[in-house]
View 1 (tube, rainbow, N blue to C red):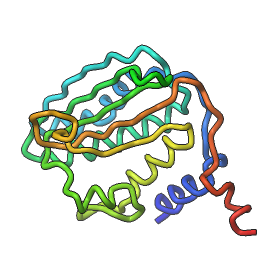
View 2 (view 1 turned 30 degrees about the vertical axis):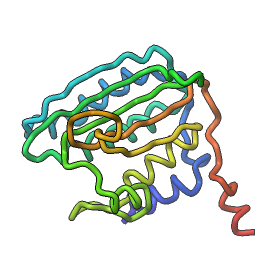
View 3 (view 1 turned 45 degrees about the horizontal axis):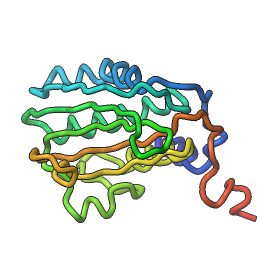
Length: 190
């Protein structure tokens, strides 16, 4: 319960929980996160494929980005109990905006339309033992630095393989953490 309350407070009061913002190498964050989920991967028949080509750095708190990446990796591992492929991909943005794309894909069953509609809502989960806060918190962490997360089926991205792909779009300029869309909690209560 304490973890859930802390996560809710972290989302509701982002500036109180934000850490040090620095220019972060997303490739290194992915590699460090792999080390932290290695014990889960060791129990599976999941192949990890890296395609790390981003050269730009993103302005974010390293630990918060790592929390997002680990959450996405664990979700991907859990949807492939019989094995599969976990693909980690990074790119510099090619749409004229300064930023980085970080993508974590699996070869699991993919996302149904029902799941996609509710994917980032608090307390929504497809797991028997989940609390439904992982993706919701992850979106909050990324958005506070001006980024975004989208969940798509790999086929929607033009790939032949089944599975889901979570794309994290990040800015390259370090930003101060942002308040939520309606301002601080105190302002909302007033």
